[in-house]
Every structure is written in structure tokens, then in C-alpha cells.
Length: 425
Image (tube, rainbow, N blue to C red; front, side, top):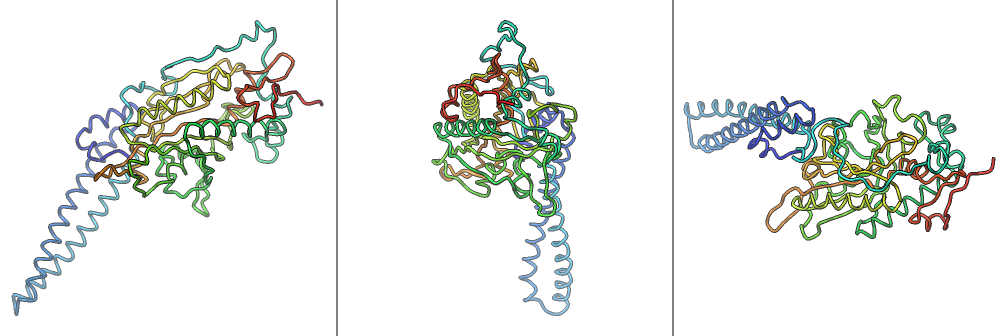
């Protein structure tokens, strides 16, 4: 959530952010009104309590009619205090409810618009010209089936659409990717983490995934647990309700977890293969830093993602995601999109988001800098979303004979294999 003080001092900035996101601008005025009622009711409660305490000191000294009058007034004050306390609580709850609906303030450099209004910041590598090589590229599913690596037909029988089995070399390829990603993250100073896939409501809500993204979250109603769509959730909540000394920052974690997404609203999109699925594994980078260092850390996360994709020898572009596609928690987001030959376009593989103090305020994660305690900043960055990375690897590194070349960075994790070979039928 944002700082209420900032809202009071510069409501036009918050309105502009809401407008850029395509969100409800009127929410700002509703929140200002609720906050004013919260503060005035708090003052009213304090005044009544003070009067009640003063009156309480007079009653034991009074006698006769004076005491009776004071007791009568004490009863009236008691009712007024209870009413003021209730109003104070109600106004505070309303303020918090509205505050949690408000998205993070967008960074001033973020391009304004929807999903297609991003800005391309950089293009790295050149897509292959398969025509000049004399063959038509196959898509990842055809390649994966020929390699004995992907089985979506049996997955559909067992679990339904948007599920898959990775079999044989496909399973080995996932393990190679995960191990290589964790090795890179560890070398960069991240602490490797295996995180819970089930979290309590506060952890999910605190990271901002029960607002705009709620329709894509799986909820186990009987137990009131949520299945995470990313290890960002348990990593963000790892230090909730804690105060971290500034000398310990930055804290960096690399989480590996299964991820679950309902993919609501994507009917008909990416239905073939494993690009958009309900369950997948992912390695996620997560940082806790001083807010003054958040923009520099954001660039560092992006650089680590670029290092990863460059090592996989994939052509990709870096985009500055537009305001309407940020999600509620991010103030700015950079995506790395890999070239997918059979689609003839770049598709998202990694994402790096600066959430500054937004999640930390919601989860009460603070830092102590000398005598001062304040919210810190959190950032997250995908290192390897496994199925999408497999899609990009298979399609970009396929050969005319049906084999798939293994990038050098993965070979130590695949027993030295230089090529993935089709299985005999």
C-alpha cells in the first residue's frame, strides 16, 4: 500500500497514477474522505476519554445532588466514548479497505497505456533465418513429442487442458534449467530457497495478488489456503512483521517452487503446447533493499535475467511494461521477451518488478536505520519459468535433422549432451 501521508500531501499524483493504470480515480477521493473521518473520530475519541478521566476524579469527592449529576453525566460520557471508539474503528477499517484497493504509484518513466503500449528498451541477439538454412521450423510441441520430452495428451486425460507431462529428456531438461538457474543466482549472492506452495490469506493479500489478480488464484476454501502463482508470495512474506537492521541489507533469495494459475480470461490463447499452463515450476529472484537503492537493484535484477537468457543463446528484447499492464504491486516492470520462431514474435520469458515500499507496508516488513524504523523496498525477478523457457529453447535451437542443440551453459547439467535426439518410434 502507499503512504497515507503522501496521499494527503499530493493527491493529484495519486489520481494521475490511478488514471495511468486505467483504474478508478474516484477511489482517491473516497480514501481521502475515509482518512479524514478516521483522524477526526480519533481526535473526538481522545477528547471524550480525557473528559471521562477528569470526571472520574471528581465523582469520589462529590456528595448528594452534585454526585448524582456527575454520575448521570458519567453514564452519558461512557456511552459517547463507546460510540466514538466504534466510529474510530469503523473509519480505520474503511480507510484500510480502500487503501488496499489502491495500486502502487507508477514510476514517472513508465509508458502510459495497455498491454501493447510497451517501449522496447533493447534487442539482444538476432532471430535465425530458417529459410536460408533450408527448412521450416517446427513448433515446440511437435519437437517435444519427437524427442519424447512432452506429453500433453495423457496430461489432458489425467488433469484436463493446460497441463502437461515432461518425460525422459524433457524432465532432465527441466532439472538442468533449474540447477543452472540456481547456480547462477547463488554465484550472484542469492540464498537458494525451497518455498511453500500453500499460503495463508494474509500472505497472498499482502503481496497484492488478491486484487486485480484474484481471478487467477486457486483458493482451497475448506482450509482457507491459497496456491501460489509464484514464489514471490512466500518470499515477500518470509520477513513479515519483522524489523531488519539496515546493515543486513540487501537480502536476496532465489526461490524454487511449483506455481499455479487459473489463466482466467485467456480462453483460446496459447492452447497448443506448454506456453500457457495451469501448473509449472519457476526460479524467482527476490530482494529486500533500502528504498534509496530500489531502482539500482531493479537494474541489477534485469541484468541477471539478461545474463541468463544470453547464456541460453536466445534472441530476446527488453521492454518497459506500460502502466495498464503492471499489476497492482509494481511501480515499474521490465520484461524480457524471447523470440519464438513459429509464432514470429517475441513472448515474455522473464519479468523484473520494483514494488518499492508497497508490499513491505502491507506485510509490515521494516528496516532500522540508526534510530529510524521505516518500510523497506521489495523487488522480484523471474530467472527461469521452466515451460516457457523450454518452448524457446526447443524452437530456437532445433536443427534440420530433428535434433535440438543444447546451449553450453546447460551441458554440464545434461551429462555433457550437445544435442537432444528424437526417440525411435
